[in-house]
Image: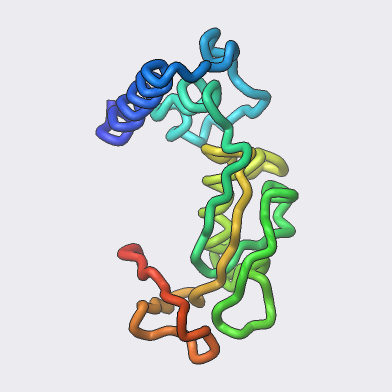
Length: 168
């Protein structure tokens, strides 16, 4: 078992223990190990390794959760993400709301990140770890460009800060 899988398993057990200690009810479906109607592709090895359908989905599939994706934008028209992408922001002045991915050479980095989080498994796309979550897209950079909090876009409000990613 990988380190990530062990950490996820410990986190799941800790969350269940905390819920029990606080007297929170664990849904009957979780107690019975029921899974949702989502079916990960065999190519989504992380779902099996992290045991997401067996350990996470019985507790939550992300309903009521909004995840911000600060990236190259998110292609909201992707079938796999329909209904999951909220109106976001474009910090670079492209007159958008983050719902267009500017990384077109690789099917969109921001779109890929969003699909790993909240993908529905429609049209050959992946099933995300939290398929009922909503995505708040924020266009903060173009492909191959890194911005840091000390180099905001010229049109960005002065009270806005960007987090820079260690991943390039």
